[in-house]
Image 1 (cartoon, rainbow, N blue to C red):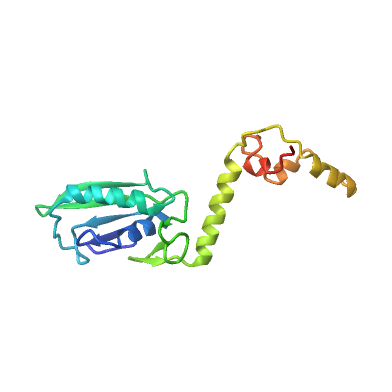
Image 2: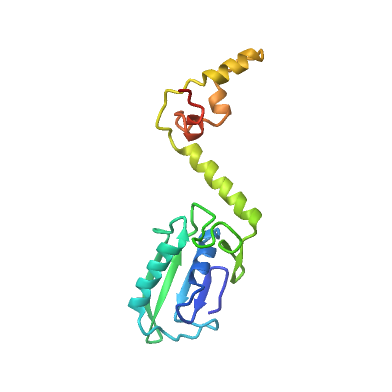
Length: 190
């Protein structure tokens, strides 16, 4: 088997592992990384698959943001009589994922292109982040629901307009079930 857009081979556990996982988290389909198999599909195996499994879990937990916990699984397998590890990575819902030490930059964000993990262009990083924040803030119900928007209403009235009943919906200040979302809570008057 050769590498594809969804399959990556690593002969051994190396420094570039997080980069590959991030590329799959940011990819629309996720992917699988095999450790203990070289680029040509030859099985080398791992001398300490159990130890490597713990190291991988720890590295992915501590070096990737937002948290990738629950988005990957590490499975120990035997191939050609040798122990290998298979890391199954889901496409993440909170793109862009990035290396903690480099943040949301071209040095920290990667995307799968063909059979390689490539740096993500800054424009794509910004677009994915904007989409993520817009989506999450608008879906979370605000802690306080006693919002009056009195200053906004006064402003409209002084301009000769009336603020209709649908204003909160039109300004995307409501969750799907009609409660004020976090965007709406920023309009709270004390």
